[in-house]
Image 1 (spheres, rainbow, N blue to C red):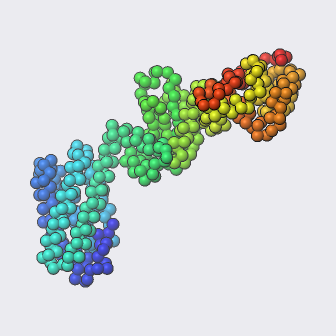
Image 2: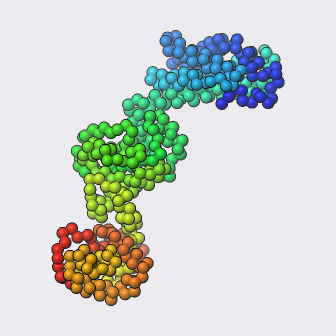
Length: 428
């Protein structure tokens, strides 16, 4: 923000920014002294500090700030970069010395108040019009607010980089990037800057599941590019970009007692969804619906995740589709539904079905005649076949929750699961 803002249209030549700068230059040294004295008098913690080495740096910061303000009045193109650097470091030093943030901000408020008071007096003595004095005071207050904001950034950055605070801020950043709905990009960027984390365009979440209690006593060190929380109820990691084989191997070595479920690499705003899918894959593995490997990839099980996303709804659909089988025993139901799933998967090829189930082709034909007699037109209806395949994709369905509808006639346990040790048989 230029301190010249507001002058160019309303101020006559006698009150031009350059002329005002000339009026203020002789005041700089005494104004800096007055600000420092006021800080000493009104903020007790600084009374002792201003007489030592710390006082020299504070005084230098005050003098340089008001000098830059006046230079910008005369030349709006004058750089404020060095002044910002000075006050950024000042904020950092204040935090490292253990002074509170409120104390730092109070010092800037004192500087703004004393500067405003001086401008009022100089304006009256120099015959500047009231509008010019008011605009000048507004510009000074805005400039001091800007410097206070720069010092605040330095203070928070230094605080974030202390051991305990850095860990706290990184956990907060992790929560923020996984937030649903997505957090504002600016909020993520500001916090990432404090912690030294480079915000990626895409990232991959990893849901972590302890497999033993040993992890509770074992410290874990991960790459600082990763955001992670491993001690909570739902441990998770965020990896910038995609997880490559080398990175995955490193994580497995660092977390030998954990199962890792990788969510798809997505844009940062969809990271929360991707983590939800990764956690759902862990749940499916726990229930035997997908193979419980040491490393799971949610994108390899998207159909399973979709089908199992609403188990109660699938149970209702199952009850409606297979109502004609209600009078059969559980064993009969299991055999027929196992055959039906193979029939759907192989598009009706009897030989392939027999090979899949390790039974005689004649047994397949017998079962299919039973299904045709029982289910009838549903086997010829594309929509019904699609719905049946959805239900049968649940390899180990849960029992349905209680609801307002009658309980299903068909126990979920009778639905077929993939055979692990098939044997040839001619049973009916």
